[in-house]
Image (cartoon, rainbow, N blue to C red; front, side):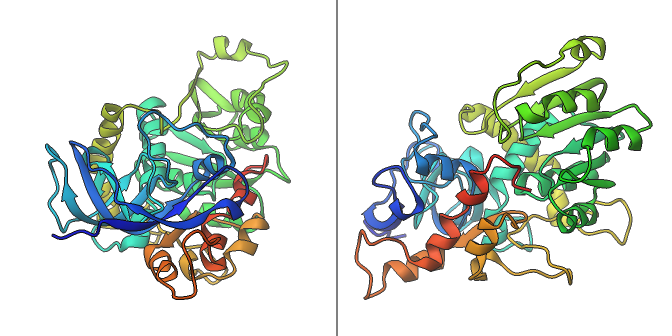
Length: 388
């Protein structure tokens, strides 16, 4: 296969606001031993991208300076020693940066084939959230069938993935979210009870719903502001997994006695700094345990009428439908008003069409269509309030 010598990508000449992102031309990424080169058809948008754009997220050693941590597309080249894939395969992958581009090189051990029936936009929404949830909820916190589980930010990308996976694998699920519509969406995805954190105390609700016992596992991205109530919401031998601290990184005046008395475990992790071997182990777990559920349309609510396990770039609406974010011109307003659910995915064809426009020059600020979708999520992601 003959490849071009250059590609279009989203460049960030310097940290700052969304307007700092521009379209640029440059060489294709180096395909290192063990890598595959993907011609990107769609890529996901995640909080670390926003933090990196602002200059608040130091790059791990060897990571691409180009934004983007998940992509879907076609394998067009293989590095020496790369196994498991052939050119022409349709894959989605957890990237070490570089997904906001026409081509992205990733370790083959961080890629999976598209689940049957998925297109590029749906597949691109899988890696970051599924790797994160599997690693933190099932590997580290060891959630098992028959246990109880609470996830904060239930209508976010992480939250919707966690609700569905936990329910599909036999756990009873509770979730927090910021308004009635988001709570309804969480319950439709499999949560037994969704708690509007603006109107209810999630600790009181969890203890009431569990007969005073508490839950076995909590997945938290709020941090300091929720710490005491998280500890109070856990059952004996419970596990608290912290993956972000939107509510602050400090915990002042906390009572840690329940950690000892209830034999609790408090843990935390980041996905991007993990080693290649650790990411491969997560990928292998997903391939074995989760991809068959996605391909089989497993019912996540435990009854035949429940929704099938899914993860795509669609926003729930009152009539049960939804619009693809890549087709939603109103995404910027929706995100800035903290009304987002699930996540954002940008179809690569938008970048390609814009970059080849006769009215656009290299280095120009990105078009509204692209910038609305790629840049703006900072209004939600940068907020100290949970994004869901």
